[in-house]
Structures are given as C-alpha cells and as structure tokens.
Amino acid sequence: MASARGRWLELAGSFLLGGGVVAASYEWSRASESATTAQPIASADPDAAPADPTSNVPPTYAGAESEGTPSEPQPVDSDATVPEHMRGDELGSYAGFPAIETPLPPMMAQDESEFPRHGLVTSAAVIVRARAELAAPIHGILRGGTRVRVDQERSFGGGCSQGWHKVFPRGWICLNAGLSSGDEPPQDEVVAVVPDLEGPLPYEYWRVNADATPFFHRLPGFGEQDQADGAGQAWIAEHGREPMPTAPSERPAEVPAVVKEYMNAGFYVTKASEEVKSERRFLRTTRGSYARKYQLGQREPTQFRGKLVDPEVGLPIHFIRREMPLMKREAQGSDVLLKTDTMPERLGTWKFVKKLHIGTVDYYEDAEGQLMRSYAVGEAHKIKRPPGIGQAEHWVHVDLSEQVLVAYDGDTPVFATLVSTGKTPGMTPVGVHRVQIKHVATSMRDQPMEDEAYSIDDVPWTQYFQGSVALHGAFWHAGFGIERSHGCVNLSPADARWLFGFTEPLVPTGWHAISPSGNAKPSAVVVTE
Image (cartoon, rainbow, N blue to C red; front, side, top):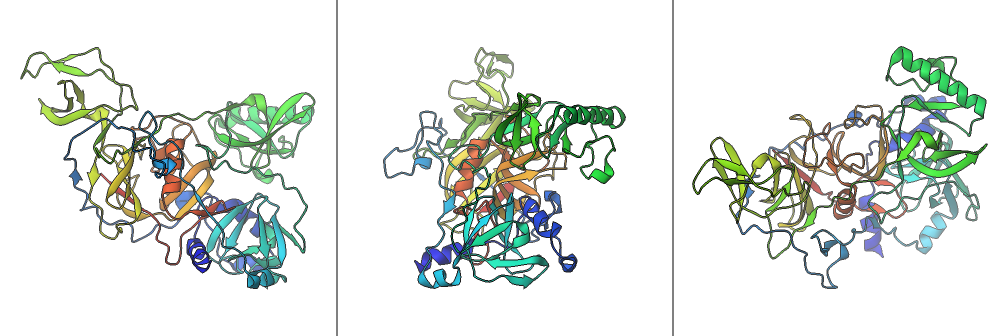
C-alpha cells in the first residue's frame, strides 16, 4: 500500500502546458484583486512554455547500427504471457494499446479523517496545484465531472477569493475554478465528456467547413443566427480570413451577444452532444459552445499503424515514404535503370537488403535486384542507448532524416513507425530530452498549426518534451513520412495512443494531465538528424 502511494506521489507534476489554460481562466477570472500579484500560468500558446535548458545534449552517440539481416516485419510471439500491446496482428502491428492510467493510492483511516468531504469538478477543468497559491507549481488537470475527496475546512489566501480545498492524495484546488463539495457525494450531474482511453481517439472530432462559422454561447434563435451570419460575412469581406477577436468590446457591434466566437474552415472542435432547436440540429462542443451541424463535418483518422519489432529479426524495417515504381538495371552492372510494374504502397513496408550508390543517387535494393530511391524510403534502424538513459527505461528515438520513430525498452527496439516532424531544419530540436508533460488531449489554438489547421481542440495523446514541441496524434492528415509540422512530432492517432501508454509517467486514474516530479524519471525522447 505504501509503495503504491509513493509511486503516485512521484507522478504528481510541477508544470503543465496547453491544457491548463482552461482551468486557469476560471481561477483568475473570479479571483480577488490580491491575485493580480501572482505569476501567470502557461499561455494557451505552447510557444510560451519555458524550455528545458539541459535538454539540448549533442547526439554524438547516435551512430546507426544497421547491421544484421533485414526482414519484413512479422507478428511477434502471441503467447498469452505477452501483453496485448506487444502482440503482433496479421500485419505485424500491435493487437491492442497499453494502459495509460495508474490507480490512485487506497484511502487509509488517516486519509478518511483528513479528507472527509466529497468534491465534484463542476467546470470544464480545474488545476491541481502544489500549494494553495495561484502561482504554485501544477501537479495535474482534472476535467469536469471528476469526483475527489477534499479536506474539511477551506484555506484562504494565495490569490483565490473563494478559498482552497486540499485534495486527496495531494495538491490544492481553488474553488473559483469550479469545485463543489459536501459531506455526502454531490448529486449534481455535470455535463462532461469522458475521453475514450481504449481507442485511437479520445473524442469525436469535427472540422469547420466554411470561414466565419459562428459558435454560440447557447442555442440561438433564427433571427440571431441570421444576424451572426451577416456579421461574419461582413468581417470576411473587409478582413479576409483574419480571425475576429473574441472579446465583445473588440469586435463589430453587429455581432450578436449570443456569439461566442467565429471559426474558419480547417479549424477543429470536439463533440460533446447533439441537440435540436426548431428542427435544426446543433453540435455542442466539449468547450460548451454550439454550432449548426450542417456547417461541420466529422473527421475520421487514418488507419495507418506502425510495426512491432520482431525480437527474432530486429531492425532495420523499411517504410515506404513516397509512392513510386521500383526500378531495375537494364543489364547486370549497368547504371541505366528502367521502371518496373511494381509499385509498393505508401506507408507500407518493403524488404530491402542493402543501400548502394548509382551515379549520383542513393538507392535501396531488394533481394531480387529491384531498386528504390532512398528519399522514398524511411529506414528504422537501431542506435545505441544514450548515456543517462537506464537499461530498464522506456525511451524513443526520432530520426529526422528518415522520418521514423523507434521505441525502446532499454537496449531493445520494440516498435517502429513513420512520423512527420518540422518542415524546416531546427523546428524539431535535436538532442536528448525528457517528457515534461502528458495530456490525454490539449488544445492548440491561435497559432499557425499544421498546414490548413489553425485551431485544434483536444489534440490527442500529447507529450511535450521541449518547450512547445510535443509528440502527439494528428488526425487531420495522413502525410506521415514527410516533413510537414511546425516542430511537433506528428504520429497517427493509433501510434500516438500506443506511445502514450508506453512512456512514463502514467496518468493517475481520473486525471487528464500529469507532469513528472520527485524521483519519477520521465521517458527520454532522443532526436537525431
């Protein structure tokens, strides 16, 4: 029992990115004037997050170890003793996902006495802080509807006008943020969307189809909808796709008060529910706003998944990054190459046996002498474990030149896949990093995201490892193997979910985000060129 508690306390965090902004807005918006002296928390813009000054260790260790017999990925041992997420399916991928949660420690008699009251998160999200101060480090984030145990009496000060409750097993919540409590479990029903932790996506994602699509605070009437549409079109005529300010004092007077904000085509929201008013269907988002359903379209993710590494075969694994026909020499020893009728499928794998130079171009060659340009192939190869990473640690290697990621258990590679990293050099920082924070989902807004997307609610399975740069799922594209991000490491949603459970720390049950602290060592993210 004591060890379980110690493990959980080690997992409690000291700093969060992105997802904390929603909860922080509740703390600050209702706090007394005394709160103005407290330090602001992290901005919604991940770029505002401080970088880890110790993380940019030059990757001098990263020499490739590609020796060995190349082979097509094969399903690993499906013995019942092998965890499901390490069992290969018929395609050589994983048969399931690893767990991402760790249980809270059991309440002992002393805990029952210290935390006698029952609490319920009534807002969209609340922050759990290390001390009863708005400027204190953050342990984690709880989403609406989460039930907790809290202490008997409120503590005041620290910039929170309504006071603080200490929560089991550790941390403090400002009541301004949205926490009710009572001697008995609250009977209130909080409208909250519970994330799906077992599938490739935690929520249902919808894309905005047209510019200046209005999102409403409540279900609007027909007249309010017409007025909102007219104001949006007038804004586009004058300002183009420039986002309209959300503050009522900064936007045109023609915008009705019922409008919360306007979103442009390519923005993404997550669905909480569907409602009908006057025979018109609306979607309610997880942020509590409403939009007409016909103005949105559900986005289904790519089905691409990486491969488990067969322990009997090992690496390399060769992924097809670009679709093009295999070539063959015109004659033995000739440098004249002719196209064949064989076209390996992009995002698939192919068994190449060696890399060679013909003329001025590098090629991979298979056992039958068929060739493919090296820039169309992503080779997942083994590297040495860097100094400072333990033999029993889970860690990942991101190879920028190959656009691949390999997950390791100590010295053993166990999983490989294609990724999309920064589209220009330097965007994805090279070095040995550590996971700084993990979010089941966090919004990335008000920044030029990937290609068409500008605002994305609840980006899934996000793991920040260097300032604003993170590993995360990308449901809005399937261009893996090609550089296309502004620095983050994009994975398919399924691969990002698998990796989220593979790395440390795990998320406490019922929590939505966690930051490592204490003696808990977060997983390393090694980035090489």
